[in-house]
Image 1 (cartoon, rainbow, N blue to C red):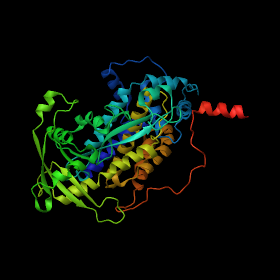
Image 2: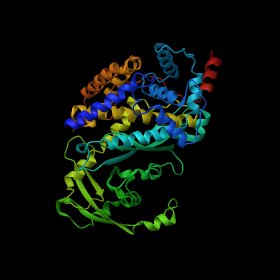
Image 3: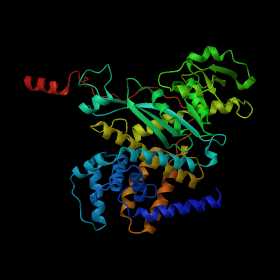
Image 4: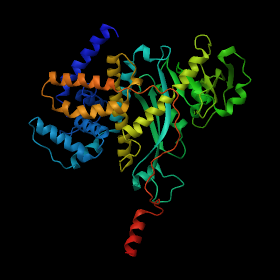
Length: 467
């Protein structure tokens, strides 16, 4: 790492430490200062009266609630109460009512915009060594989440068709666009898990404006269609996707490019109902693509052969081995989603209304981005890639250091803590496990309780009558 980079990192750390000891939230005041939050609220045309839980304090408290192992509102308010007493301010009420009402007033658009902004910040600060062939790679994938079984959530998000009324949970489908180099969330879209326009492809189409000229889109076969490839090219980006199983017969007829794969030409399908006529006419009548066959020789892997399709046509500038290696790196998005759902506990949401559920999703994504920015700073300091650091280790260090940073009495003390935090995050590295094979099974058995087959209210009534 160059001396200039080290000096720049030191200046950033010092600037962060100046504000850390003045903020009641997490150690992210440099990324989410009050003036930045107020600027976005002004753009949204939202004004708020002067309250204890102003938008900035509400947001910082919300993020601390998301990252803390105890997700309760009571614990979040207790942290604010302790901070006020520590700094000689009048203690606030330990009741959670004021904070919960402040969360309801917090605009969802504020959380979404901050998530996109922090994601782009991480991408802009990525070192060239972290990129693929010097180009930023953006990877997209989807997952599912559940939430409390309330009437409002059921009406908006719906339950699975297999679940009996009153026995299941409303389900959400979430599609996220990640930066492969840094791991930050660049954008996200979510909706009901079933119904018209709720599929992963439909949600992805609302995120395609996130592609910029020079980007490389990476995704699995679920996103492989003419429209994804054509619209990526229209935005000046390239794409690397696993070939849709319905195209494999067509791919065999392409002209062979030696070890670089085959050529594939796709003809534009009929205009779909969701695409406007002007946009349909602007797309090319056919696409010239390249396919690369990849044989997986590692024993224990489920897939033995796959075909990757790409808009990168030059087999000399981009050899088949580079395309295969990039598609293998797509697995990082699965680890990112696992970190969100397990490490940050986003798998089961707690909001009892659709509006609060949406804010909770954006708060998790924003907190994840802020953790990733800290990891990027620690990786830059240690001369390594952010992908070599552990997300769980970074969250654990942040949770441990947050109370000390909130109680720091001076900028010098906060600076020393922040330096120690970056060093600690840089020490938690993931192991080198390139060909690990694990069964999709669990060893620890669950409790031997039957599943609830009727609504809980009816079950309680039966128990009371039997008693």
